[in-house]
Every structure is written in C-alpha cells, then in structure tokens.
Image (cartoon, rainbow, N blue to C red; front, side, top):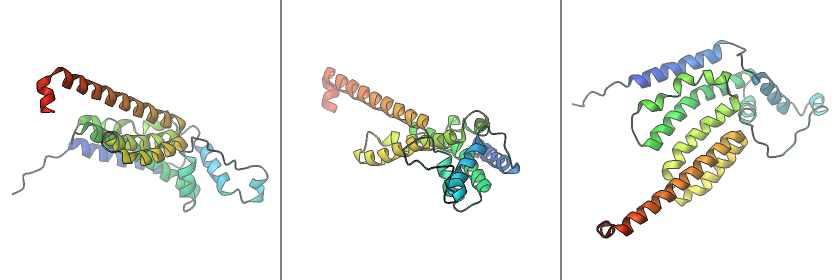
Length: 214
C-alpha cells in the first residue's frame, strides 16, 4: 500500500488566492490602474497604423527601446482577441505568473521540495497592481523564471550562455529595470562562485589530508 501523502495546505491556499485574483481581474471592466488605459490605447494605435487617420498622426520608430512588457504581449494577443479582452488576458498572466514564478524560483535555487518561503508572493500578487506598472510585473515574472532556471546551472554548463544571452535580450525589451536586476543577480552569482572557488583552493593547499582526498 502506498503511504498517504500529507495535504499541502499552503498550496491549497495559494491556488485559492490565484483563482480569487483572476476573478477580480475579470469581474470589473475598468480596474483602478494608473496608466493601463494609456498603454491599451498605444496598442490600439500600433494595430491601426495602416489606417490613414492614424498614419497621419503617428509614426512607428524601429529603435530598440525597452519597457515593452505590456505593449508587446498585448499587441500579440490583440491580433486574435478584442483589445480589452487581450488586456485582461495579459493582466491574468501577470497576476498568475508573478507568485508562481516566485515559487518556482525559490524551489529551484534553494533545492528544497517544500518551504513556506515559496508562498510569500501570493498574498501580494494582486496588490502589486496598484503600486507597480503592469509591464514591470510581467517582466518580473519572467525574471524570476530566468533566475530559477539559469542560476542552478551556470556553474555546470557553458552551453547555456547562448540561451542566457537571448534571455537577457528578452528582459531588456520587457523592462529596463528588470534587465538591470538580472545583470546584478548574474554578477553577484559570478562573484560568489569565484569566492567559493578561491576558498576551496586555499583549503586544499593548506590541508595535505584534504588535498589527497581531492
């Protein structure tokens, strides 16, 4: 007989919070978000640039500017969905992706199968909409996924450098602050690995017994 698995009540609460947040997103047509309507209008302009009315007043500049974390994904969704539905779908991605990507990052970096810290972001995932930009929240979710995937593997494989470069490029276009945060994380990780390697070399050189075991 298989032993009974204990119920993870933290996980149950996390799922309930996620469902409640999604319901709040779709329950109201207009959420009290600061610049969300302006970003939606920018997506509308991008999609309607072929219209002479918009073409006379707006011009698309093909320059590598960051902070497209909302415009890019909503523009892609708007190719298949009405604008407001595309916006709601994007907000749903944010409110679901942020806490679950945080959970993935904590589990991956710590190496633990279960920890209370992995559920830290769930109570704050909806409230962040009123203090942080939606594009930044989406980029932050991608950043947490990137940290969870790359950090445990950086010292084990150099073949990830190409994927990491593509990831940094994606983060740059999503949001400049998210990109800078990833750079800081990578530099800190590199310094930590370098310090760890030096400590191991000093330990092996100062201890003949340890050196022979190595």
